[in-house]
Length: 172
Image: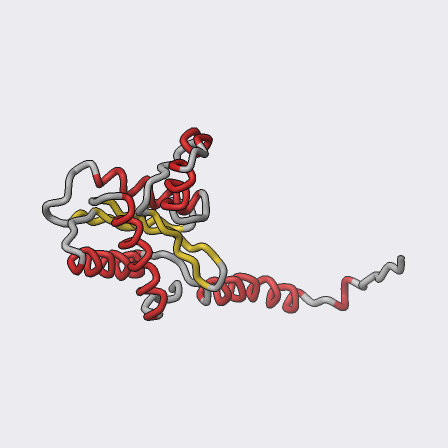
């Protein structure tokens, strides 16, 4: 292995300073090009979910979580049962933490895979749907208010419509 020795005089303080100053700028630029679930994007997703629910004559509660599982936004339509509040949040987190639509977990449970019922912090009921952009999961939507299949269909339709419309904004 060949060692390269640099003379301290060949690297000026200005060169080192320029390099150190450029590092945060480069990181900021690459981060700004990434998609995330911020409040603006969460509200776009919630609006779409409410449109889907109105078209299906359903009342829903809808929650959006970011890639870390943190609640970003939540709304409950008038006439939606109060219990749907917590269910929507848990469905969103379950879809994110287990990287799949929660209806798949519900179907597996119904087919006898009872281990799913023991997963920590999981709600294996339709209505949670991951939000994936360019192969990266950026968050999840959780929806509650009806039966599992109805919630699952509304959640999937909402996320897919928003992603198809390309109305999500890149991070600031």
